[in-house]
Image (cartoon, rainbow, N blue to C red):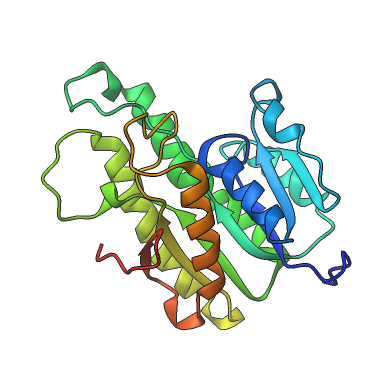
Length: 232
């Protein structure tokens, strides 16, 4: 599939309307990428939609609505170099017995964080260039060796996401497409809270820098936002 916009590298970012997502959009623009960013709710996406950049498309897409993803897939006109599955939710940091862990809230976390990623990759992979990179935004909370009992289902969803990443690395190996996951750091967002260590700009800048450094031999691995390897 030909890419026509001055041969700019392209990046597709889900959950692009807030937090780390919109910071990734801004950093990608600063680095002269062709940017495709998705949002679920237009009313909550004013900051994203007000960005003025010639080589950007902002698309309404719900990662847990397969028809929504299919609709987008029928209208994409560009190939993709970086597919960044960033859309995610957290039901809270409570324990097993808190209201955070009702069946409804837990299913939402699993649907968005795990199934949403699978569906996104499934239906957008046909646009991936050779040597493209599939990047899943995970969390260090998903590592198997931990002592925390809080955020039980969020931890489980990110552990599952890393497992999915390994499967994707095998699935796309023959196409010379890599897959890996990244912990974005403890970031000052609605999810990370005001006391987190780094800003969204710091996280996004380091993430994009390290996305660009990835080699095919990095496929199947989990990285920190600073590029260091995480044992999961």
